[in-house]
Image (cartoon, one colour):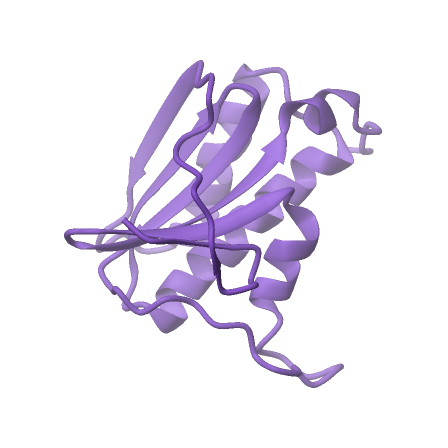
Length: 155
């Protein structure tokens, strides 16, 4: 299993969060509207875990959107979304491609495209990839303390 971290290209030895309390899985292979379904699924998990209503929880939903969109555009589609709660919120998007994600050297300001991994890096505490026998997963983590202490958002 190879893991690449934080867009540096450096190997990162990070397995699952050390204290996973809960894990939820959403199958997405062949599902239409998978980004909206993934966001809704994650929103419900955050609510159940008491991590909703903060700016950081909104960042987590944006991470889900970016990871799912990247899998659709660059890896042939999403197979599964996994969200885990513990010392961190871990978001994993599984796809069927073994090609590792690459950041664009310099995305054009004001133009669409090429910004996804910059957003993932900016909003998460850590991110990376790991390969498996059927493809790879791209993951991002947010420290639980950020989710509980974040400033509430207006609804």
